[in-house]
Length: 531
Image (cartoon, rainbow, N blue to C red; front, top):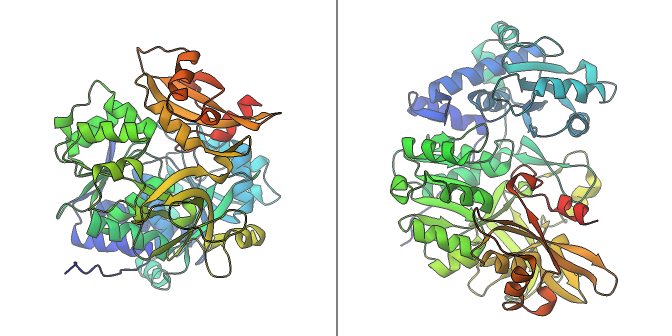
């Protein structure tokens, strides 16, 4: 008989309170230069919640977080939750104009930010510029530093926390107990094909149920799990694992920026049992680093990796005792909606992205007609379940376009479902090239390029063509010390793929030249470069 997996749903703040009660002295969060126990995380979050209420924040108020990965970020996130408010994590790489748009659009009550030597930029200065260009209310928004002190528009950390002395813990508790599991917990803005980012409204059930269930029943190794994630906590790809870690009172390892050497030292020093490098470039940097050695990862039992088969195979060879998992996910689904089964073999783990996660439904449909397609046919994947966002903030038109009356989310992603239920990712609908009437999935060409031993990273986009509508062009970064010319790399593809799939040109890139979004290469910027 299969083990019973019970459903647990609770508001996000409750996860921290439970972990702080059961394991107060256990490290909740560790960075190379800072750490916090669960008791310390709770105390810091409570102080921030008291100060927010003293500022006048009411249940459901939108609180923006412009803070890099840090103890203070975690305390601010849970402080917002304890106060019954909604957290709006902001990308610390955004420019002033981008921040100004989101701050205006998201109806922000207060902004919690940072002024610290490890910040990726002068966030305080960027925020000042953003608010100068914001709407008429921009100058009156409440801004406080939860990390550091600075003159200017923001209330310093000490002064902000002093505000909370007028609010009791009992008052915080009274507000927290009113939060419902389908109330909004987060609004995470995600970029797409539109001019402005869209704010995904994610309820507490969506952001806690799946991550905690996976952490407890699918990914746990025992009483104490140690999770490492490479990405920023304003991104769902790292925030969801962090929430799962808190849900099982685990220890979460991260950094304010990614450096392969620092990541290796952090994971090996603290015995990581679960790792989320997520994307090819991050995994590649770790296994190619001089400090990498398989024996240093003896405690690692699970590793998430979305990458071409050649890289997945290489990682499986290097770490044979680690279960390599692939997954499907997006911000609109609060992270993962499909995941590798325990029973899947090596080939499946290299070539598919898992199966629909229990409690989540998927359909594969023709992107134009919406008609369901049989297994083995590529189409747009639709998702329905507890994890799907409630909609896009303050945008009824986009919400209605994205979620139908029956609750199915149009993801804009292309997949094929195999007869056994495994899903194979084929790229975004907009990444599907039409070459002389033939469909070409960019990911298919990228996988062929990645088979060449000289290729480190490959990204394929379409270039307009008068005769064929568009043709594939590849952007490629080579491995250190390896060389290959454009003609030779095109010949490699021609020997392995139909002629219409072969790149018409290769653009060689260095590591520093890739245009990046929060966690991955920005293909829109690559298309713009071709234009």
